[in-house]
Image (tube, rainbow, N blue to C red):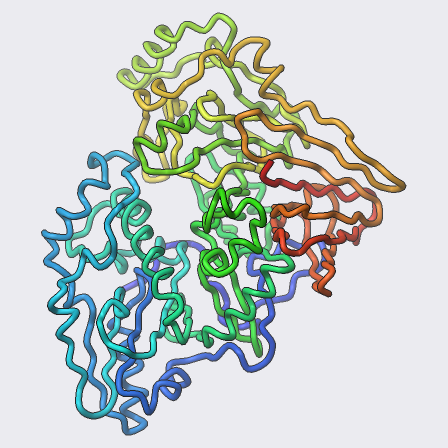
Length: 588
């Protein structure tokens, strides 16, 4: 049975399997070095670490193959002459029907895309008596293994096995990973919805709760091997990143409107994939950080960094956002593809009341690349009649016929480095032949589609249309001349010196983040001013970032990276000829 369903390769387990990228070449697998002797590989080495202990709690993220992991460790331990007793946490959970009833209030209606962030805890899914009554074997090692192992009352070392979110979803599609405590299989949309609104919420809170008890952190993305490091070694690496700079591991998805820009520009992407619609450049609820030691790679979820160093990363904004990283960067690729749906995003009060989010999906489109004639749809025509617009949309759904969307929605030519502003409630879409750098608040699944060009998704089905949600949020005052005035950024030089200038690309008043573009021939020095900066080289071959702490790292064209507030100041050095241009987003 295939245990993952995707065209994308597994991340290499070692640097020997990956070629170091040349300057100017996008790196799909960026990593930070931990130093020698920090990352260990294989079940045998972890079994050796376990030897001599009476009980080990092996907790971790959903999607791990706990039976396979337990069997692998048991074989290694028994080969070393150690008797092993295995207790699987799946046997300690409440009945599946009870769990279904517990999570149902957070899942919305079946067939809909959204639920509401869960307010229960992981412990609520378990049978308290069963957790309390585990009796370790008198001899050898007892392994309590699976999600929630640390919920037992046992005083024992904790091994935490993480799993990247993209790999979890590939396993979900292969039906080798299901929701917590769920025995029946649902369709992928329902399974993902429960991951997002229930399972991930519970597991992230659980991880934070047991953080100080964890002794070993492991990466479960490879089937036949396990990379692991001590919590102390990982903590050292996270501390270093929180003072300097970091890049998360990106991942990529096809879609109904996807294009070919990323396929052509990013080495390592599977060229046989039908298209690439999205890249998760830095959508941190789904990205990880990769560490290296002695050629071994190990990935952990980004939230480890925030749980330990939110203040260092966000500086003065930590009080506002806590451990939630507020800004995301991603690509929308429509080169030789199609138009995105005509859509909008929820207003702040709506997303809080309906979905339990604290901030909403305020977006911008920074045009990284465009073909001649590329368009962006933004705002309404001056003569918009909301009732007539709604009727046209509903008729289109009912009869499966196209409409002339430009009767209702304005359309603009798009050029490289244009900057379009999409505060919540704004009707918008990217047309074909754009590579959009979407700079946004972190929420990323709350898109209310109104019109999808009468097309089918990659599975041959219509994508959900959300006219009711959209009309509860649309701002019909964003129309006519007001669109140019408020929604197309008026970029201007606000500072300059010899060989450099700083361009302000103002965002809308409702955006909590702002954007600068630094343009320089040789180098530029930047102060964080107590803010985290999220950056991308949007023109040029490659740059080197140096911090005051001695950190030095190359970043190539179209790569996203961040400099935490605690770095204080940093220098960006242009490695190529001509002018380098680096976009910088930060909380206002």
